[in-house]
Image (cartoon, rainbow, N blue to C red; front, side, top):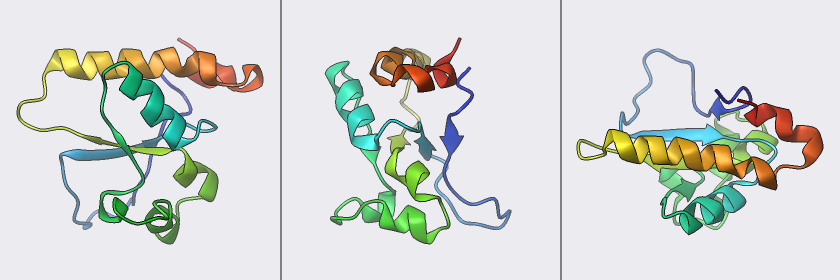
Length: 113
């Protein structure tokens, strides 16, 4: 669906993680732009990693995990749980698709349908 969408994190099998938090990246769109745009659509997400949410440099945790800076810069954090509905997830995906207009024309292929 979105060829350049990337999950940010580790590939190690024995890593502890929360099954209710997903970190993804939509390069070249900065994470703050994605957060603001989705917020205007009524979708609440965050940037950076969960353990750096109160720090000034939110990318630092992801970079320290070995995530390239351009990927860390566009990272967003999605939290969901037992009460998240299928409709809410579909609205999020539709919101991501609408971000294509914010991408420079030369990079728009990454959101191709």
